[in-house]
Image (cartoon, rainbow, N blue to C red):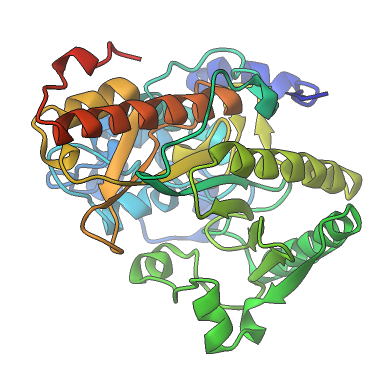
Length: 395
């Protein structure tokens, strides 16, 4: 019962790549009379852009995508706009630099998206996405993290809802319908022995917003469209015991988050897994299942979240390791990323670098094992010893 079984495969999903690559589609945008010039004249300046979008997009690829348009009206310039608004910093790309306006983007613009996904997640796309696994009992070994170093942990997962555009492109009516669906599904969740409160953002006062660490939308969110009509049809659901928070219509349709003020990542992962499966069933009953693509797995607005949509984060207290010359090589081998937090100069957040290519259990195990090794390295450096013999081989 724990295995995530994909829905019945549709023929379109198994055949779309050769069809699209051999097809020269008509220009649906000609009916809209947009004042656009040729693809060569419209090609963006990517010379100072370090996102994956900029590294992968070529004039020839842009010409192939230029006249394509999804049924909801998403064109290729909508897809690459985030990377043009936030070009990133050299030398290495941290951002994918693109978003999908709807699920059809992953099919229609597959020539581009597949390459971005493979580059970002370092995993080749095959005919079938890796099988999911939400059984937290499959985690191997002890997952207890040293409380002297691991001060907080979080498990979060994002999901898109079938038949609706993603937040960068959805209309007010779609967003409000998504809010209604979320309210109904979360009411069912409350009836399943997890009482909570459904809080529309427009009804929250400043004190409640501070308690939820809710920040106003950033300039970037406003530019790419995820914060349009803020805070209309946005909401947060909070369980009574504080173990689970569900964000509705923020950067994604749904984001489930379980946060703990210790290093017990298993409990956070368990909370997300159990309630995600319940919500998945409720949405199916409402005839709006979560969005699944055969080659990619679960998809949402960002290609950085395809596959599982799962992020495991652990906040570590580190003094010596952040300045070590081999740190970036270690992180690359562990396939995790680490960045400083704003709370303390010695507090760092460690998380999985990819969401695609492994199961949910596999990604959680990856972060747990990586954090344990980083803590072991920190202890060695505290004693004045070397860490070379602890450096792992490539994951």
